[in-house]
Image (cartoon, rainbow, N blue to C red; front, side, top):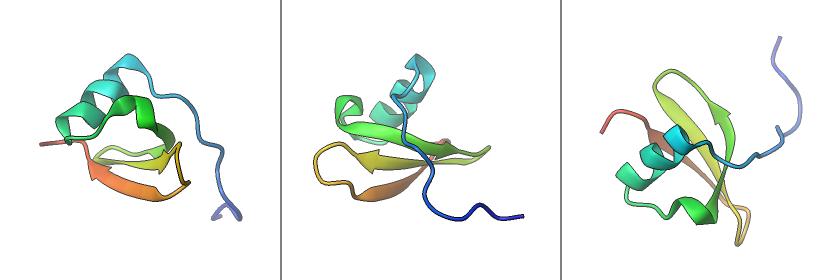
Length: 57
């Protein structure tokens, strides 16, 4: 069953920060909404926009 609504964004772990930095983003500006095997869904702290990044670079 698919969840309705938006999940809560949380601060990234150290490993997640490394993945964010490898995707040429500043980890301090992003929160993690969800994480899957091959990608992560991030939310900007500044304006609330979401972005999907790949874990494998």
